[in-house]
Length: 195
Image (cartoon, rainbow, N blue to C red; front, side, top):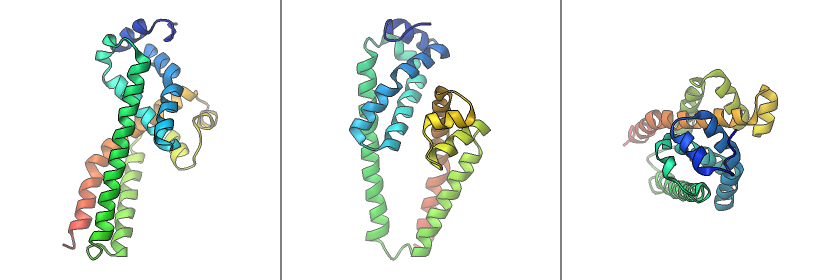
């Protein structure tokens, strides 16, 4: 077994060649550090977990370039910081858009329409969740709907904490894509139908 903290270049080179065992070692070794950085910057537990999962998802997606990285600690810190700042900007612009829809144009959407938007988005998310593989679906629901920690989910499902993390990472990646493809057209339809 290669220890990431003893030989960074070797493990990064192996991950860059698609070695999933090396990636799991990297994931397990750096998870807490990345999460701590994200939490320190954004101060919200769930957002920090999402960002941490996104860091590792990006790391795997861009694994071809990992062999050139000399300092993984620095690379992961910068990646985490950038994702936090992007998330904060997105949250700010989403808040601004919601405020625009709800306050600047109050006549466009009635209370019934607000409920309809919420209901339809909720349905869209649930449809996406139902398309997840059964184990991912169960882990995701335990995490997001029941507030279980990764350790609690691992015990409940009789799997490792690392497996839980992997399920959650893949679930979030799938649901983000699913919502991009389905939710925006739904919102635009609901907002524009009364214009």
